[in-house]
Amino acid sequence: MSQELAPIFLMIGGIFGLGLLADSIARRTALPRVSLLLLSGVLLGGAGLDLLPRPGETLQNFLSTTALTMVAFLLGSSLSLDTLRSRGRAILALSLAIVGMTLALVALGLWAMGVPLGLALLLAAIATATDPAAVQDVIAQSRRDTRFTRTLAGVVAIDDAWGLVAFSLIVLAVQQVSGTTNGADIPLHLARDILGSVLLGVAIGLPGAWLTGRIEEGEPLLIEGLALVFLLSGAALALDLSYLIAGMTAGMVLVNTARHHERAFHEIEHARWPFLVLFFVLAGAALDLAALAALGAAGVAYIALRITARVIGGWLGAALGGSPAPERALYGAALLPQAGVAVGTALVAAQEFPQWGETIMAMTIGATVLFELLGPPAALWAIRKSGRQD
Image 1 (cartoon, rainbow, N blue to C red):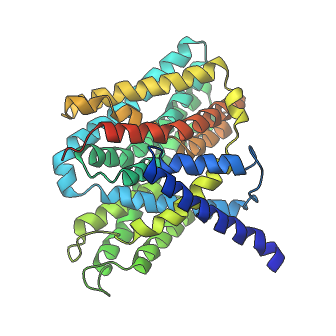
Image 2 (spheres, rainbow, N blue to C red; image 1 turned 120 degrees about the vertical axis):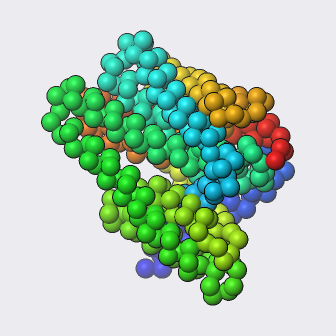
């Protein structure tokens, strides 16, 4: 048994060492920690030196679920009533404009290139997804608590929820047009998934808000935060709900109802980094760089259209939300990262529409590789370019 466990311990120790190195380099350069970790995973994984043992699916899912639930909690805690009063209009306008523009521009652009309309709509819906873990870590690395970063955190907290709604409605529409019989169940599933996830977040967030910070007055303990994270993750998986939406809701409930301590999940900010290190390095090791070469002209157009849509949608949403003019062109660049949510929706689409499954997966995985490597540097550049305004 000891020989079987040795590679796992060596892998975890080595990855944590890479995390220390990435953090040290990031502090001295303009490079995001996320990109350094992903590149380390690419170098040491199957696409590179193939030195990392491949963790089982159970371990991979455990790490990703834990890391993303922690991220969702922290993003939800950015939606305090004070933030919503001051930046709520901008957050809502930006999130809706970016999702709407991505849907419209990507779908119309691919359709104009000759891609079937149903496939173009599905790919456009997948393109709405953002990687909340990468964006949130770039915000944390920047060490800036400004109007721009607070708005950005609010947008990335809810835009995947809008994207999920859009994706489900488009799947329903394409199924009905193509005559697929199970399309009528999607509105019910959509309502159950979103409403159920919100209710789960409230059900765990409300007692969590009252219980945390009681053992040591004024400060939630690490074990309290971890208990809520794992209870929420486990309940969401058991009920087949979204742990991202549930985590965001619980974080929002905590920050707005926990009156006896100032900061919800103070300790989670420290605990999440080891999980994120494992998550990003293993995600990099799983990236298939060959998928980039298989994109073709439609894939290149898909990437260009998504970038253009994010920039235009970010500018339009920021203008409608009343954001200062110098910030408006920066939100699109800050919201380029894309990862697990996009791949998850692509898997659903490929299963529902097997005639397009191979194209959907090839384009999504190829685009995800590019956006996951180039998106975090773009986000960090946008945050630094936005300045240090209050």
